[in-house]
Structure formats: structure tokens, C-alpha cells
Length: 126
View 1: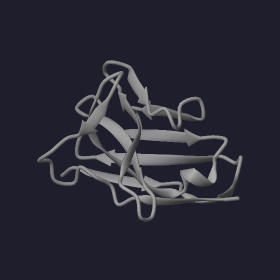
View 2 (view 1 turned 135 degrees about the vertical axis):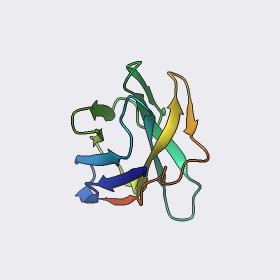
View 3 (view 1 turned 180 degrees about the horizontal axis):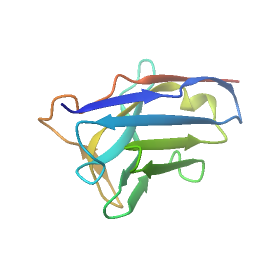
């Protein structure tokens, strides 16, 4: 059974850092790529970053490039999102999901039960 569990969210001041984790089970990071998405109150879900371990492919949305860093620990079957220089606009619920990841775009994988995590809240205070 595929399962993704996010953790690491919290409250941080502007300019601070957080590291989110996405623990995967039921598959390995060689099987699927992992992407991070976020959704702020009243806004649509938007992409953040993705990583494909076998190919070493990484992608960042413009809004987070240079501030966020995605990485994968295959031994722990976990993907991390290091978020630095956080801004109030980064406030959102962050989700990880199974994705198809390329160097220029990514999108969620359809038709796989459990392909989304439950989310973790990030609040950046001004």
C-alpha cells in the first residue's frame, strides 16, 4: 500500500528556515518521483519542487528557486524540502505526492491510491 507522510511544518518568522520530510512506504524512490505542492488559504494548489532519484532530476518553481532545496535519502525512503529565507507568502499547507518529474515541469501521478500525503502546515509570520 502506497503511503506518504509529511512532517516538519510549523510556525517560523520571516527569514527563518524549516525542513519538511516526506516519508514514503509501499514503494521505493526508484519507482516513483516525489513532488511538493502547497496550498494557501483561498488559493489554488501550486507546485513547489520535485525530485526523481533514478535520473537525478530536480525541478523548482520560480517562486522558491534559490531558497528551497529538495533532496532524497533512498536508504530512508524519504524526501526532504529544506526551506530557507521564508516569506509570509510561503504560508500554506505543504503536500508531497507521487509525480512525473522532469527538469522543466512535473505533474501528479493519477490512479494510485495513497499518492498524496495528508499535508503539513507552514506558517511564516511577518
